[in-house]
Length: 165
Image (cartoon, rainbow, N blue to C red; front, side, top):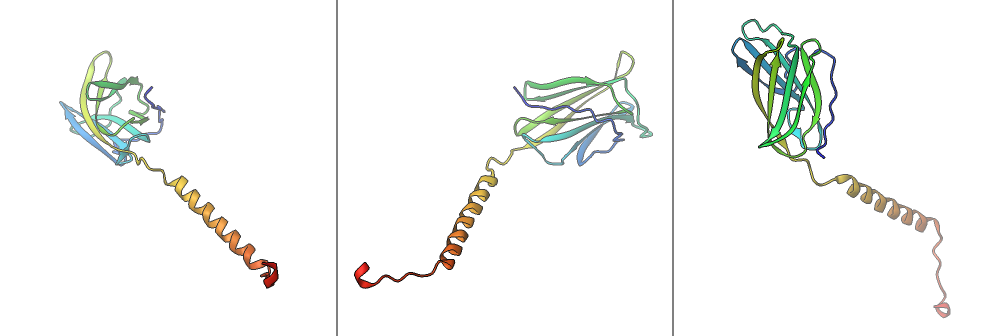
C-alpha cells in the first residue's frame, strides 16, 4: 500500500508558496500551489498548500471545496476533496518514489467548478545508504580500542624469567 499521511492544517497560509510552488492564471482566477521543502524527497513528508485568488486584485477567495489529485504517469496515487479553512487547503503527503508527479486542483463554488489547474512537482530520490549503522560501528570499535589501551596502561608489565617461558 502506498504510504501517505494527510493532516489538515488549519492555519492560514495566504498565498505563500512555502519553500517553492507555482501560480497559474485560469480566467479571472489565480490558482496557487505551494510546497515545502523546496526539494521534495521520496519517502519523506512534504507540505502541499492550495489557494485560489482573484487574478486581477490578488484578493484571496473562499471556494466551497477543493478537489486534489496526485498522479504519476497513468497511476493515480491520491484523490480527495477538502473544505478550505480560511480559504486555504494544506496537508502533508509522502511521495512514494522519485520522479515527476502531476498535481491537479479543482476549485468548486456552489455546485460548479470555479477553476481547474494542473501543476507539476519533481521528487528527488531518497538516499539509499543510511550512515547511522556505520557511525555506530565506528564508535563501538573506538570504545573497545580505548578500553583495551586503558586496561593495558593500568596493568603492570610482567616479565617472565627465562625458565618460565
